[in-house]
Amino acid sequence: MRECMPGPRAKVRSFTVAGRFGGDEASLPIWGGEGIRNMSELGEADQPAPDDTGEIRTDLACQRCGYNLRGLNATGLCPECGTPISLSLRKDLLCYAEPEYVKGLARGCRRILTGVTMLLACIILVPLASAGVSSLRRDETMGALLAWLGVSLAIGAVLMGILGFVHGVWLITRPQPQVFTTLKRDTARRLVRIYLLVAIIGKALSYSIEALGPPPRVMAAVELLGIGISVFGVIGMAAYFMYLSKLCRRVSMTSRGRYSKMPGHAKALAYAFAFALGWLVFLSAVEAIWYWGPVLLDPTGPPGGPFAAPSPMLLGWQAVTWGCITGAASLALLILFLVAARLHYRLRAALTREAAQAVEHWDEASAEART
Image (cartoon, rainbow, N blue to C red; front, side, top):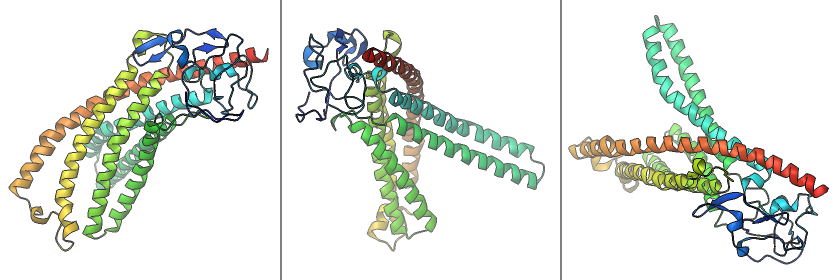
Protein backbone atom coordinates (compact mmCIF):
# COMPACT_ATOMS: atom_id res chain seq x y z
CA MET A 1 0.00 0.00 0.00
CA ARG A 2 1.27 3.45 -0.85
CA GLU A 3 1.94 5.88 1.92
CA CYS A 4 -0.57 8.63 2.52
CA MET A 5 -0.43 11.89 4.39
CA PRO A 6 -0.89 11.47 8.16
CA GLY A 7 -3.96 12.72 9.94
CA PRO A 8 -7.59 11.66 10.26
CA ARG A 9 -8.54 13.10 6.88
CA ALA A 10 -5.74 11.50 4.87
CA LYS A 11 -6.91 9.98 1.62
CA VAL A 12 -5.60 6.56 0.62
CA ARG A 13 -4.44 6.55 -3.02
CA SER A 14 -4.43 2.79 -3.48
CA PHE A 15 -5.47 -0.31 -1.62
CA THR A 16 -5.61 -4.06 -1.87
CA VAL A 17 -8.35 -6.57 -1.12
CA ALA A 18 -8.95 -7.14 2.55
CA GLY A 19 -8.85 -10.62 3.91
CA ARG A 20 -10.84 -10.06 7.08
CA PHE A 21 -14.34 -8.88 7.81
CA GLY A 22 -15.33 -7.75 11.26
CA GLY A 23 -12.28 -9.46 12.75
CA ASP A 24 -13.13 -12.90 11.36
CA GLU A 25 -11.26 -14.49 8.51
CA ALA A 26 -13.29 -14.64 5.31
CA SER A 27 -13.42 -17.51 2.85
CA LEU A 28 -15.33 -15.79 0.06
CA PRO A 29 -13.75 -16.72 -3.30
CA ILE A 30 -12.34 -13.91 -5.43
CA TRP A 31 -10.50 -13.65 -8.72
CA GLY A 32 -6.76 -13.94 -8.52
CA GLY A 33 -4.03 -13.65 -11.12
CA GLU A 34 -3.98 -17.45 -11.44
CA GLY A 35 -7.70 -18.12 -11.17
CA ILE A 36 -10.11 -18.20 -8.24
CA ARG A 37 -8.62 -18.31 -4.78
CA ASN A 38 -9.92 -17.69 -1.25
CA MET A 39 -9.28 -14.50 0.64
CA SER A 40 -7.81 -16.62 3.42
CA GLU A 41 -4.97 -17.55 1.04
CA LEU A 42 -3.80 -13.94 0.72
CA GLY A 43 -0.72 -13.01 2.66
CA GLU A 44 -0.90 -10.61 5.59
CA ALA A 45 1.14 -8.08 3.58
CA ASP A 46 -1.75 -7.83 1.12
CA GLN A 47 -4.46 -7.40 3.75
CA PRO A 48 -5.31 -4.11 5.50
CA ALA A 49 -6.84 -6.27 8.22
CA PRO A 50 -7.58 -5.33 11.85
CA ASP A 51 -5.47 -6.73 14.67
CA ASP A 52 -6.64 -9.16 17.35
CA THR A 53 -8.54 -6.40 19.16
CA GLY A 54 -10.38 -5.39 15.97
CA GLU A 55 -8.46 -2.12 15.54
CA ILE A 56 -7.28 -1.15 12.04
CA ARG A 57 -3.52 -0.55 12.13
CA THR A 58 -2.98 0.44 8.49
CA ASP A 59 -4.29 3.26 6.30
CA LEU A 60 -7.71 2.34 4.94
CA ALA A 61 -10.09 4.70 3.14
CA CYS A 62 -13.82 4.57 3.72
CA GLN A 63 -15.28 3.46 0.43
CA ARG A 64 -18.04 6.06 0.58
CA CYS A 65 -16.36 9.28 1.79
CA GLY A 66 -12.62 8.52 1.76
CA TYR A 67 -12.11 9.07 5.51
CA ASN A 68 -8.97 7.41 6.84
CA LEU A 69 -10.19 4.60 9.12
CA ARG A 70 -6.82 3.87 10.69
CA GLY A 71 -7.07 3.47 14.46
CA LEU A 72 -10.80 2.66 14.45
CA ASN A 73 -12.49 -0.62 15.30
CA ALA A 74 -13.55 -2.77 12.34
CA THR A 75 -16.97 -3.40 13.85
CA GLY A 76 -17.87 0.28 14.09
CA LEU A 77 -19.07 3.00 11.76
CA CYS A 78 -17.19 5.62 9.77
CA PRO A 79 -17.29 8.81 11.88
CA GLU A 80 -17.66 10.92 8.74
CA CYS A 81 -20.53 9.27 6.84
CA GLY A 82 -21.76 6.41 9.05
CA THR A 83 -20.84 3.61 6.64
CA PRO A 84 -19.95 0.31 8.36
CA ILE A 85 -16.16 0.03 8.49
CA SER A 86 -16.34 -3.71 7.81
CA LEU A 87 -17.56 -3.00 4.27
CA SER A 88 -14.45 -0.99 3.45
CA LEU A 89 -12.31 -4.03 4.27
CA ARG A 90 -13.76 -5.82 1.23
CA LYS A 91 -14.44 -2.93 -1.12
CA ASP A 92 -12.48 -4.48 -4.00
CA LEU A 93 -15.26 -7.06 -4.35
CA LEU A 94 -18.37 -5.83 -6.11
CA CYS A 95 -20.72 -7.68 -3.77
CA TYR A 96 -19.40 -5.44 -0.96
CA ALA A 97 -19.18 -2.24 -2.99
CA GLU A 98 -21.75 0.54 -2.79
CA PRO A 99 -25.04 -0.97 -4.08
CA GLU A 100 -25.94 1.97 -6.34
CA TYR A 101 -22.55 1.73 -8.04
CA VAL A 102 -22.99 -1.98 -8.78
CA LYS A 103 -26.55 -1.41 -9.97
CA GLY A 104 -25.20 1.20 -12.39
CA LEU A 105 -22.72 -1.33 -13.80
CA ALA A 106 -25.49 -3.88 -14.35
CA ARG A 107 -27.70 -1.23 -15.94
CA GLY A 108 -24.89 -0.21 -18.28
CA CYS A 109 -24.39 -3.81 -19.40
CA ARG A 110 -28.10 -4.11 -20.14
CA ARG A 111 -28.07 -0.87 -22.15
CA ILE A 112 -25.15 -2.14 -24.22
CA LEU A 113 -26.97 -5.37 -25.04
CA THR A 114 -30.18 -3.50 -25.87
CA GLY A 115 -28.40 -1.05 -28.15
CA VAL A 116 -26.51 -3.78 -29.99
CA THR A 117 -29.73 -5.79 -30.41
CA MET A 118 -31.49 -2.79 -31.97
CA LEU A 119 -28.60 -2.20 -34.38
CA LEU A 120 -28.56 -5.85 -35.41
CA ALA A 121 -32.33 -5.80 -35.90
CA CYS A 122 -31.99 -2.79 -38.20
CA ILE A 123 -29.24 -4.43 -40.23
CA ILE A 124 -31.32 -7.58 -40.71
CA LEU A 125 -34.85 -6.19 -41.01
CA VAL A 126 -34.31 -3.05 -43.10
CA PRO A 127 -33.26 -4.91 -46.30
CA LEU A 128 -36.11 -7.38 -45.85
CA ALA A 129 -38.61 -4.58 -45.30
CA SER A 130 -37.32 -2.72 -48.35
CA ALA A 131 -37.77 -5.80 -50.50
CA GLY A 132 -41.27 -6.31 -49.13
CA VAL A 133 -42.27 -2.70 -49.76
CA SER A 134 -40.95 -2.88 -53.32
CA SER A 135 -43.02 -5.96 -54.06
CA LEU A 136 -46.22 -4.74 -52.38
CA ARG A 137 -46.47 -1.14 -53.54
CA ARG A 138 -49.13 -0.61 -56.18
CA ASP A 139 -48.76 3.06 -56.92
CA GLU A 140 -46.03 5.65 -56.64
CA THR A 141 -47.72 7.62 -53.86
CA MET A 142 -48.18 4.64 -51.57
CA GLY A 143 -44.71 3.38 -52.40
CA ALA A 144 -43.12 6.73 -51.57
CA LEU A 145 -45.07 6.94 -48.30
CA LEU A 146 -44.06 3.45 -47.24
CA ALA A 147 -40.45 4.10 -48.20
CA TRP A 148 -40.37 7.34 -46.22
CA LEU A 149 -41.93 5.64 -43.20
CA GLY A 150 -39.45 2.76 -43.36
CA VAL A 151 -36.45 5.05 -43.66
CA SER A 152 -37.67 7.19 -40.75
CA LEU A 153 -38.19 4.18 -38.50
CA ALA A 154 -34.81 2.73 -39.48
CA ILE A 155 -32.98 5.99 -38.77
CA GLY A 156 -34.78 6.37 -35.44
CA ALA A 157 -33.96 2.79 -34.42
CA VAL A 158 -30.30 3.18 -35.41
CA LEU A 159 -29.99 6.42 -33.44
CA MET A 160 -31.67 4.87 -30.40
CA GLY A 161 -29.38 1.84 -30.65
CA ILE A 162 -26.25 4.00 -30.89
CA LEU A 163 -27.34 6.24 -28.01
CA GLY A 164 -28.22 3.21 -25.89
CA PHE A 165 -24.87 1.61 -26.60
CA VAL A 166 -22.90 4.79 -25.82
CA HIS A 167 -24.90 5.38 -22.64
CA GLY A 168 -24.31 1.78 -21.58
CA VAL A 169 -20.55 2.06 -22.08
CA TRP A 170 -20.56 5.34 -20.15
CA LEU A 171 -22.42 3.68 -17.24
CA ILE A 172 -20.28 0.56 -17.09
CA THR A 173 -17.07 2.65 -17.08
CA ARG A 174 -18.19 5.02 -14.33
CA PRO A 175 -15.63 5.41 -11.53
CA GLN A 176 -16.39 3.84 -8.19
CA PRO A 177 -17.42 6.61 -5.78
CA GLN A 178 -14.67 7.77 -3.42
CA VAL A 179 -12.26 4.94 -4.23
CA PHE A 180 -8.79 6.40 -4.64
CA THR A 181 -6.87 4.32 -7.15
CA THR A 182 -3.67 5.14 -8.95
CA LEU A 183 -3.69 6.45 -12.50
CA LYS A 184 -2.05 3.26 -13.70
CA ARG A 185 -4.91 1.10 -12.45
CA ASP A 186 -7.52 3.44 -13.87
CA THR A 187 -5.97 4.09 -17.28
CA ALA A 188 -8.14 1.68 -19.29
CA ARG A 189 -11.41 3.08 -17.96
CA ARG A 190 -10.29 6.66 -18.61
CA LEU A 191 -9.21 5.83 -22.17
CA VAL A 192 -12.63 4.38 -22.99
CA ARG A 193 -14.44 7.49 -21.80
CA ILE A 194 -12.03 9.83 -23.56
CA TYR A 195 -12.48 7.94 -26.82
CA LEU A 196 -16.28 8.16 -26.57
CA LEU A 197 -16.06 11.94 -26.28
CA VAL A 198 -13.47 12.23 -29.06
CA ALA A 199 -15.48 9.98 -31.39
CA ILE A 200 -18.73 11.90 -30.86
CA ILE A 201 -17.10 15.29 -31.34
CA GLY A 202 -15.03 14.09 -34.30
CA LYS A 203 -17.98 12.55 -36.14
CA ALA A 204 -20.16 15.59 -35.58
CA LEU A 205 -17.37 17.86 -36.84
CA SER A 206 -16.70 15.65 -39.85
CA TYR A 207 -20.35 15.51 -40.94
CA SER A 208 -20.76 19.25 -40.47
CA ILE A 209 -17.71 20.07 -42.59
CA GLU A 210 -18.70 17.64 -45.34
CA ALA A 211 -22.20 19.17 -45.47
CA LEU A 212 -20.67 22.61 -46.11
CA GLY A 213 -18.76 21.36 -49.16
CA PRO A 214 -15.30 22.69 -48.26
CA PRO A 215 -12.29 22.89 -50.61
CA PRO A 216 -10.39 19.64 -51.34
CA ARG A 217 -7.55 20.55 -49.01
CA VAL A 218 -9.94 20.92 -46.07
CA MET A 219 -11.59 17.63 -46.96
CA ALA A 220 -8.17 15.97 -47.03
CA ALA A 221 -7.42 17.31 -43.55
CA VAL A 222 -10.79 16.02 -42.30
CA GLU A 223 -10.10 12.58 -43.75
CA LEU A 224 -6.69 12.41 -42.11
CA LEU A 225 -8.27 13.52 -38.83
CA GLY A 226 -10.72 10.67 -39.19
CA ILE A 227 -7.81 8.25 -39.54
CA GLY A 228 -6.36 9.53 -36.28
CA ILE A 229 -9.71 9.04 -34.52
CA SER A 230 -9.89 5.50 -35.94
CA VAL A 231 -6.44 4.70 -34.57
CA PHE A 232 -7.54 6.01 -31.20
CA GLY A 233 -10.65 3.83 -31.57
CA VAL A 234 -8.50 0.71 -31.82
CA ILE A 235 -6.77 1.70 -28.59
CA GLY A 236 -10.13 2.50 -26.96
CA MET A 237 -11.59 -0.88 -27.94
CA ALA A 238 -8.61 -2.75 -26.50
CA ALA A 239 -8.78 -0.62 -23.34
CA TYR A 240 -12.49 -1.38 -22.95
CA PHE A 241 -12.01 -5.14 -22.87
CA MET A 242 -8.96 -4.82 -20.62
CA TYR A 243 -11.19 -2.84 -18.25
CA LEU A 244 -13.86 -5.56 -18.46
CA SER A 245 -11.21 -8.14 -17.59
CA LYS A 246 -10.38 -6.22 -14.41
CA LEU A 247 -14.07 -5.76 -13.65
CA CYS A 248 -14.69 -9.50 -13.96
CA ARG A 249 -11.98 -10.17 -11.39
CA ARG A 250 -13.97 -8.14 -8.87
CA VAL A 251 -16.99 -10.43 -9.19
CA SER A 252 -17.27 -12.87 -6.28
CA MET A 253 -18.17 -16.12 -7.96
CA THR A 254 -19.25 -19.07 -5.87
CA SER A 255 -19.40 -21.29 -8.98
CA ARG A 256 -15.89 -21.92 -10.28
CA GLY A 257 -16.76 -23.54 -13.59
CA ARG A 258 -19.37 -21.24 -15.11
CA TYR A 259 -17.75 -17.82 -14.88
CA SER A 260 -14.12 -18.61 -14.11
CA LYS A 261 -12.91 -17.88 -17.65
CA MET A 262 -14.56 -14.48 -18.11
CA PRO A 263 -11.47 -12.40 -17.24
CA GLY A 264 -9.33 -14.39 -19.64
CA HIS A 265 -11.92 -14.14 -22.41
CA ALA A 266 -12.15 -10.38 -22.00
CA LYS A 267 -8.39 -9.97 -22.21
CA ALA A 268 -8.23 -12.21 -25.29
CA LEU A 269 -10.95 -10.10 -26.93
CA ALA A 270 -8.87 -6.99 -26.26
CA TYR A 271 -5.94 -8.35 -28.26
CA ALA A 272 -8.12 -9.87 -30.98
CA PHE A 273 -10.15 -6.71 -31.57
CA ALA A 274 -6.97 -4.63 -31.58
CA PHE A 275 -5.45 -6.83 -34.30
CA ALA A 276 -8.56 -7.06 -36.52
CA LEU A 277 -9.56 -3.40 -36.19
CA GLY A 278 -5.95 -2.29 -36.51
CA TRP A 279 -5.64 -4.11 -39.83
CA LEU A 280 -8.80 -2.50 -41.19
CA VAL A 281 -7.69 0.95 -40.03
CA PHE A 282 -4.30 0.41 -41.67
CA LEU A 283 -5.92 -0.43 -45.03
CA SER A 284 -8.25 2.56 -44.76
CA ALA A 285 -5.32 4.82 -43.89
CA VAL A 286 -3.34 3.62 -46.91
CA GLU A 287 -6.26 4.27 -49.22
CA ALA A 288 -7.03 7.69 -47.68
CA ILE A 289 -3.41 8.82 -47.90
CA TRP A 290 -3.20 7.51 -51.44
CA TYR A 291 -6.30 9.44 -52.47
CA TRP A 292 -6.06 12.63 -50.38
CA GLY A 293 -2.32 12.94 -49.88
CA PRO A 294 -1.64 14.65 -53.24
CA VAL A 295 -4.22 17.31 -52.38
CA LEU A 296 -2.21 18.40 -49.36
CA LEU A 297 0.90 18.76 -51.55
CA ASP A 298 -0.84 20.35 -54.53
CA PRO A 299 -4.13 22.08 -53.63
CA THR A 300 -4.85 22.85 -57.28
CA GLY A 301 -4.73 19.22 -58.34
CA PRO A 302 -7.63 16.75 -58.15
CA PRO A 303 -7.94 14.22 -55.32
CA GLY A 304 -5.95 11.11 -56.05
CA GLY A 305 -3.21 12.90 -57.96
CA PRO A 306 -1.91 10.58 -60.67
CA PHE A 307 -4.37 7.91 -59.52
CA ALA A 308 -7.47 10.08 -59.87
CA ALA A 309 -8.52 8.23 -63.02
CA PRO A 310 -9.15 4.50 -62.72
CA SER A 311 -6.05 2.50 -63.54
CA PRO A 312 -5.23 -1.20 -63.50
CA MET A 313 -2.94 -0.66 -60.50
CA LEU A 314 -5.61 1.10 -58.48
CA LEU A 315 -8.33 -1.36 -59.45
CA GLY A 316 -6.07 -4.29 -58.60
CA TRP A 317 -5.19 -2.82 -55.23
CA GLN A 318 -8.83 -2.24 -54.34
CA ALA A 319 -9.81 -5.73 -55.49
CA VAL A 320 -7.13 -7.36 -53.33
CA THR A 321 -7.68 -5.25 -50.20
CA TRP A 322 -11.45 -4.91 -50.11
CA GLY A 323 -12.20 -8.21 -51.81
CA CYS A 324 -9.98 -10.54 -49.81
CA ILE A 325 -8.15 -9.00 -46.86
CA THR A 326 -10.96 -6.73 -45.73
CA GLY A 327 -13.47 -9.54 -46.12
CA ALA A 328 -11.41 -11.83 -43.90
CA ALA A 329 -10.98 -9.11 -41.28
CA SER A 330 -14.73 -8.37 -41.36
CA LEU A 331 -15.53 -12.04 -40.85
CA ALA A 332 -13.14 -12.15 -37.92
CA LEU A 333 -14.81 -9.05 -36.45
CA LEU A 334 -18.22 -10.69 -36.77
CA ILE A 335 -17.02 -13.74 -34.85
CA LEU A 336 -15.41 -11.55 -32.21
CA PHE A 337 -18.60 -9.52 -31.96
CA LEU A 338 -20.63 -12.65 -31.19
CA VAL A 339 -18.12 -13.74 -28.55
CA ALA A 340 -18.21 -10.24 -27.02
CA ALA A 341 -22.03 -10.29 -26.97
CA ARG A 342 -21.95 -13.60 -25.09
CA LEU A 343 -19.45 -12.15 -22.62
CA HIS A 344 -21.69 -9.14 -21.96
CA TYR A 345 -24.71 -11.38 -21.53
CA ARG A 346 -22.99 -13.43 -18.84
CA LEU A 347 -21.49 -10.34 -17.24
CA ARG A 348 -24.96 -8.77 -17.05
CA ALA A 349 -26.25 -11.77 -15.09
CA ALA A 350 -23.24 -11.70 -12.79
CA LEU A 351 -23.50 -7.96 -12.11
CA THR A 352 -27.23 -8.22 -11.43
CA ARG A 353 -26.53 -10.86 -8.82
CA GLU A 354 -23.66 -8.86 -7.36
CA ALA A 355 -25.94 -5.83 -7.00
CA ALA A 356 -28.51 -7.88 -5.08
CA GLN A 357 -25.81 -9.28 -2.80
CA ALA A 358 -24.37 -5.80 -2.24
CA VAL A 359 -27.73 -4.57 -0.97
CA GLU A 360 -27.96 -7.54 1.41
CA HIS A 361 -24.40 -7.10 2.69
CA TRP A 362 -24.81 -3.38 3.30
CA ASP A 363 -28.10 -3.89 5.13
CA GLU A 364 -26.64 -6.67 7.29
CA ALA A 365 -23.45 -4.75 8.06
CA SER A 366 -25.39 -1.61 8.95
CA ALA A 367 -27.68 -3.55 11.29
CA GLU A 368 -24.76 -5.34 12.99
CA ALA A 369 -22.74 -2.15 13.39
CA ARG A 370 -25.61 -0.34 15.07
CA THR A 371 -26.42 -3.09 17.55
